[in-house]
Length: 262
Image (cartoon, rainbow, N blue to C red):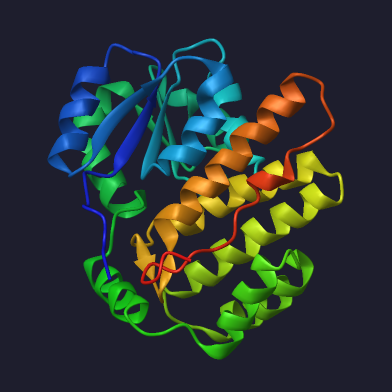
């Protein structure tokens, strides 16, 4: 079983506030990399793709509240910890009402951000990672094999019940594999039923479950499934942007197994 390299998890900073260099230094010391987002149109898609450990919002910007509320009302992004850093300590109450998980006064950034990162950031857990890799080295249980067979036969609704039962019964981190496959299958079901918006929503939700998985898990070529789902998501978005209604269902690729290239 292969596992991808573990680069520094990203934190996302909205804009380039005066304290951005200090934030970058503190994040780097905590083992996080820094990515900037400045355009609204790319914000939510970046959050879904990057799966950041933390988001910092410039509370000095006129539209700071939008950057807080937009991800918090979306199921696929609402769990991402979000911190407003503002010039006025009295802004704290408004930031929390808007949906922020915490507020920091800019003048307190150096003193308080390290504690916020330790307490709130979604940092990798080495013990859980080791548990996941151990579970991924085991074979797929028979209900999962049946679910994959149903998925590959285009029976996307039927696969849901099989993988949902596995996910509910599994206490370990490999449950993320079952949930990722389930949600991709549900997205494909929506496509076959003419519901592209529902399909996009499910594909974007599935990203959080793919995030921690190695490239191969329980025999499944997870890397290829990620790629296939991303291709479908991009094609759906392009179709909607162009005002079209017909989707090329040949893009709904089967789940492959890493050992035999099927």
